[in-house]
Every structure is written in structure tokens, then in C-alpha cells.
Length: 218
Image 1 (cartoon, rainbow, N blue to C red):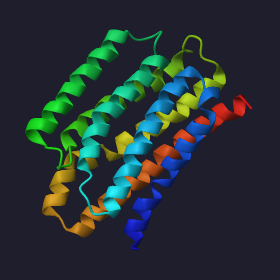
Image 2: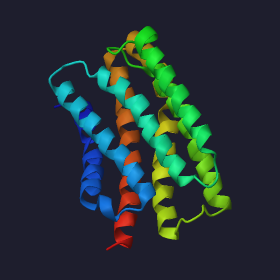
Image 3: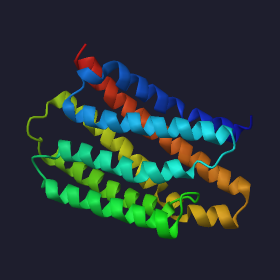
């Protein structure tokens, strides 16, 4: 197995670790972290299934077309639970509906399910970067209603992971189809190694956030 292939496979181990923490400690989490745990479980199932299809040399892009809209809905639900006293529910609901429709139209008419859906991923990244920055500002300037300090720390790590991943991979998602079409396989592989590294960093932040919840309730 090549080094590139090894790194891509290893990027799934933090995902599996986060999933195991969710399975073992779900009931002990604060309700806002439980909402995020649903996203972890969904993403892990999609990502591990994609890994199996990749080993079998089967096209797994359909899973990405499912993960992008559903994953965004789950993350929006998480942020709604975190910012419930500071942001109108209709704003999040409208954002989710518009993005879901955009993603569906993109998958049906512009970037079909066997193609990398770079447009939807780019829009998702921009929206989540904006929401995560807004959350950082909120945490710095005021204490969300009914949120203890340990929960704030846990959510802070989760929010950091989301911001780091989507801000570092935004340009990769935007230019991904261009890179895969016009550059060598080696260059494309290096780009996805960078993506795998960003994913590892994100899930390490998630794991730290989950562990801080576990430590509180032991």
C-alpha cells in the first residue's frame, strides 16, 4: 500500500474513534452535544461505507451527494441548539431549506451523482465558516443561556474543528473538479492527502470536545 493510500485510510480512524465515544457515552452528553453526536454517527456511517466502496474500486460519489445536504441539516440543527437564545429559528430553517433545494437541483441537473459535487460543498463550506465565526464571536462576548462552562469548552472544540476543516478545504472543494480533470493523478492525490489531514485535525477536535463531556459526567 502506497504512502498516499495509507494516509487516506488512516484518516478514517479518528472518525471511528469519535463514533465509539458517541455509542458508549451518548446518554451522558449535554443535549446540544447529543445533537452533534447524531451528525458524528451519520458521517461515520457514510465515510466508512465510502471507504469500503473505494477498496472495491466502486464509485462512491452518491454517498457524498447524500452526505452534503443531510450533514448540513444536522450541523445546522446543532448550531440552532447552541444559539437558540440568540438567533431566530426561522433563519436557520430557511438556510437549511434553501441549501437542501440548491443541493438537490445541483445533483439532478448540474453535477450528477457520479460526479464530485463541488458546487454544493463550496456553498456548504462558506455557510459553515460564517456560522462558526459567528459562534466564536458569541462565545467571546457573552454566555449563551443555560450553558455551563464545561459544555462551552466542549462546544468550543467542536466549533473549532468545523471552522478549521471547512476554511482549510474551501479552495480545494471549489477547484476539485478542475484539478482532477487537468492535472496529473499525483497532484490530485496530494490534494486529497491534504483533505485527509484536515479531516484528521477536525475529528481530533471533535474527540477532545466529546472527551471533555465524558470527564465531567464520570
